[in-house]
Length: 357
Image (cartoon, rainbow, N blue to C red; front, side):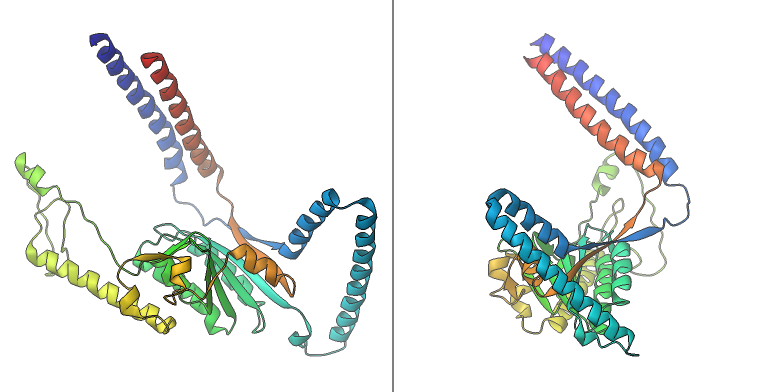
């Protein structure tokens, strides 16, 4: 037993040493990455989804259909392509001979943007760039689809991101939000701006509430005779503190601020989705898609794939994303961090097997 404890103690010491060395290496690279630098320029990536869907269909046809049937389909496809090409040329000549282009003569365009949100809504900059680009081309007959995934986060961050979606509404372009996994709290703040919200049957929707958590170690510091001096100007400059003693007056003010934020959230949702019973759904709860539709939180239970593949029959679909190239030091830093984690995991696993086999 003593030998096992001794070996385990040695194992812990080795683990801590490996971890410290790894952290030092990673922090060195990240410190270089965090030095002041010019804003990285990105580029717009556009994919024509109709072709991608057709490629999937043709790939399956080549494996499933017999040669005779496949040959017949290919001939029909060639005729359709020639007919379409002639139609496009005629439309182009008509446009060239007309001073003002009649947008009603073309197919509807759908622009698909992806937003995968975190607590800070970090992707808001890229989303803003994508919306700016799309709004330079989109017209009233078109549609913008946001494939939204977010567990929520900071109020001010998601407030700004929601304002980006509001630009779409102001220009008169239809906005659809599709939720396949989760759009809670700040995520739903964004979603409720849409003309139409769709969600998968078990996608998490809602959680219209506000939460704040502040740790306090005042009693621990007091136990070891550690004083914390907190100096402020203004009665409510600091309501709650991590290190100092929190007063009932400060707690009460903090709760008032939370309640006011919640009220603003409810007014925002009600303003954009008047069909919801705001008192029923603004309890901080969340619902799955099949239940959310009953509460008018969403309009239809459907996955984004189903919605887009169905729309591709009558519209041109373009997936638009703004990609920012990371500097070499950031790439190395994140790569080194991931590699280090994997190495430590394997090392800990192997050492566990050696000690306790």
